Image 1 (cartoon, rainbow, N blue to C red):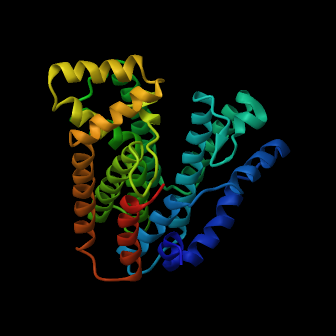
Image 2: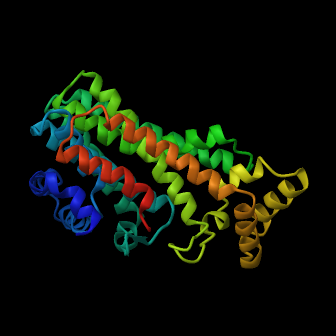
Length: 325
């Protein structure tokens, strides 16, 4: 049984019903919009976000979910999908999960309008049902994701990111969305309880580990195969590189910065950078940090009694750092 199917097992029925509700929440009077949203619904990925919402809700409330849980999962999917549609326009990207992106098929203007439409659908789904606490959680997440992206753009130009700034960027860019899913799950069944903040923190820790794992893929390994060096080509500052930059001589640092800034398209030079980072402990350091976040996330789960939902969340935490892609 594939690991994702195993994680999904305790919330399988909820996920099926969620699919139906989510499709309904996208419907419009405009035929073109319905065609596009149908295209989006049929190309969804692993659906980790709604899974987090349902697993957390069931773990903190002894297996119960309610209409708010379904709305919370729908809102996060609507608003997150809106940000992805807009991202593809910003990045001028023609592919999304192996399929053509909305902007590739229908052009930028329509893609931006569809993103706006999904955003408003998400906001209204919360407002019409007085789920203001859920709306606040997701709105904070969107604000932080935007700030994280902009902070990364601002810092990447100078390649002088400290480890602290790096953690702040990935917390906002990546971890905040998983944190929102987990706190939404808790808030849907236990509003205003301490579980909401506890589960937000849990999700944030998973998100941090997830992003560091992504950083490591750029350097390859026996399991993952050849290093890609894509982050280096795009001048992205990843944890192995930041650690290495801060722990070598000034001369080596100057060579590294020059390589990333001015020779990032030179395959041989990129491979030299990858080898240098490996030789100077950059990967070991990043792996150790990733495991710290993993341990902290698992220790939060220890506070809860054993259940299939807790077991799935533990599997999820481990999957995040053991995944092969």
